[in-house]
Image (cartoon, rainbow, N blue to C red; front, side):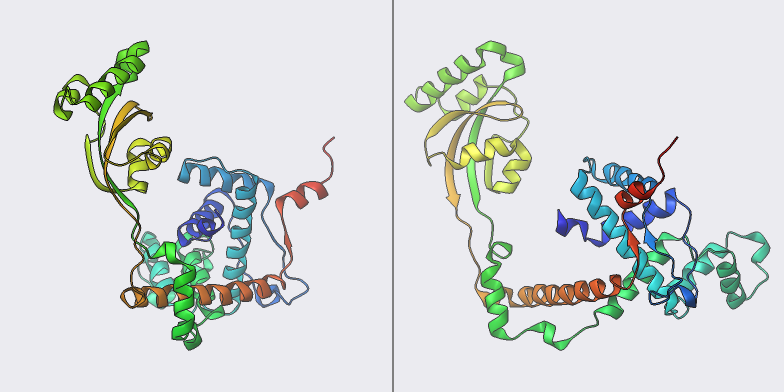
Length: 330
């Protein structure tokens, strides 16, 4: 969850939620730098925190528990700090993407069409169009991150470092375990209380050779997934028939009809034809992928250290602290 909460898509979601639901932040002047004693604290109000949770739940279809809600607030605070720093340092003034975005927004204002592009940009800033645009804030936070953690040749690592990284992250590079199987499906909704007995009878006939696979299939029910699955990964099998089915299949012997095994759809008689174990490729075959991952991890570590240092210079207040410090309602 922590890794996912740091993805760019979620940061864009947080920025959009804050800007959609709540009033835009005022552009910080020189006196609003983190080192200034008059700088306004960075805070997310309880109302804003609730809005972040709702936006997250709409986006993901899952409920935001307390740890997730706290992480969402931390992401929002971090983004606000990055945007403030970018504005104070004037990164928006020299960024062509920000300028293009402001010009795009100005095209919708009929009374501004007689202005030059420079005048339109200045007018857009005067109107505050640069203060509440999610795309501009995303650009600025990205520029600030690049400034905090610029490219470093040391991020590429030595060959021995890359090899050690490869060996410690083998699961990221190995081909997944694959399985080939056939199954006969019995629909619990159709057969009701007789489904267990029907499954046992068909399994006996399969094992004895009285009926062939095709003949048993004809006595089964229409399946929601193909009756023959060839070289599918366990992850794909889970997507098709659910985690409980996959866990049960992993315990089965090969080349024997077994079951019944439950899925979200009903019961299955299953025969594992082949298994292909996960294979770790040769280091040379994935060296470029390893180098990119190693470089990204090094850069992320430097960025986190820089963000921690930057954040220490800002005053922040979580929603819970605000709620506790608020006066009691009459």
